[in-house]
Length: 387
Image (cartoon, rainbow, N blue to C red; front, side):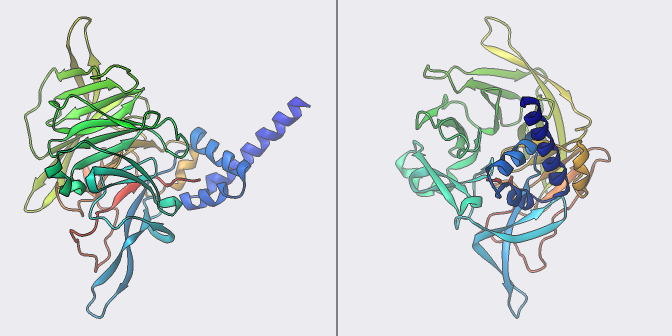
């Protein structure tokens, strides 16, 4: 009897996966998973075992065009653009805060900042469900600029799936310092405030890694350490690069489980636009008894079947080398898809870079009447939560 149940279970999984192979869009996967608990489990198993979902681009929702050809865009709703089909979907009706900027997109959540530098996690796929975190420790004279006091925020996991075991890492203040929040402790921890100019951070194998401006130094620390101040490990590049203010740096975990560092060069000619990318595989070496370690970098000439997504979102890759990846016909592997950065370039600095032929291509076409406004956030990558 046990073997019969296993056979029947395997058949159900195989049939469900065959159906999901045919469904291109995350919204269709969401509908599949919403039928019942069993189908939700099958959909979740599919995304783990066969093909992670591609993120979608969150773009302004066009409400209408006036007689002068000027577009009116919603301040509290967003649409989703699919890079796999090249279409915009308005049917989700995503609710978002009326904010000039967001400071993060991670595991399906947007991140905003309210008065007194309170970080708020917003789930647009659950009618704007919010989680308010404790306020960051800021001097009183800076609290009036709360919306600009946080540069970037990333999450370790979806807070709904892991309510008692998720971590938030924040790059905060004008000098871009580092802090972290553990849901199990409900308070912020502050890393050595002399460490400044953080460009990006990731959570990798239980440790937080951050890259410092100009990309020559990497720091790491254990968020589960019980000691305070938290012990930092610092790694200096064996071959330092020239310091370029116009360069941004990201840390990304590849599909092979390696740490990659990305250099993004933005030139102002006369407006900000991305001009080049370089990717390096990092090897962090620390000898026993030494306070500082060494970063060895090996240039990566190809991303293989990985697709990388960069911007103010949690930096990540999606491999599209499975049989069902044929449905992602407009998404190119071995490419970087990027969006604008806060205070760097303009919000329409959105495109893709192909490693094979070193070319840049637009993939999202702005509506003819969509003019950039400094009162509306630029497009963002977000991975739909299929709850």
